[in-house]
Length: 234
Image (cartoon, rainbow, N blue to C red; front, side, top):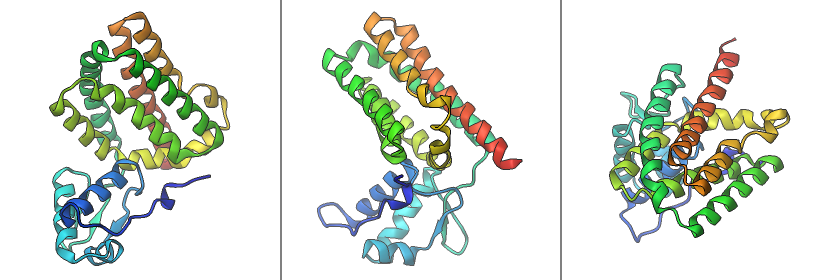
């Protein structure tokens, strides 16, 4: 089974500023769930991994802290925020509002080619889940959602959505670490149902149902996380 820990950080190149490259790699890793809650890293350790000086790493960490994706200790050590039921509920509530609105804007702009691309992503999501490639499964899920949101043609909404997914990174990792076991249960036949409902609503031209399926997908993830957080607390 592929794990998030297998995803490396690569030395930076020179086409963009070094700070931008460090920031973008860390942001992508955080958003995809490559780091667990409470994972920490020093500026020196990251500079060594990126093969760069301390300054661009320091500035990249500051940018991510400003986006609430990281916390910075007084010592300068950066760490991934801990899991919190209150934060999870707040993020989920915001996702329902903002992603639901983006879906409404997107639906009229989704072409037959988009519909085919979304169907292919559902198939990829299903197959990677069944095969146990949880990293690829999470990536297919994300590409499915962002394909829809891009069709809203709203950079402002997209910026808010990206920030919510960035802040969801520790929860993505927490859920991914438990998904392998979950896929051995009846959930194996259910985890794409909301994506399929989105596509069916799109085919019918039923915009309220399309938005409702997006919202139901977010709520289902929130419910799963509640369940696993309760198990962890017990």
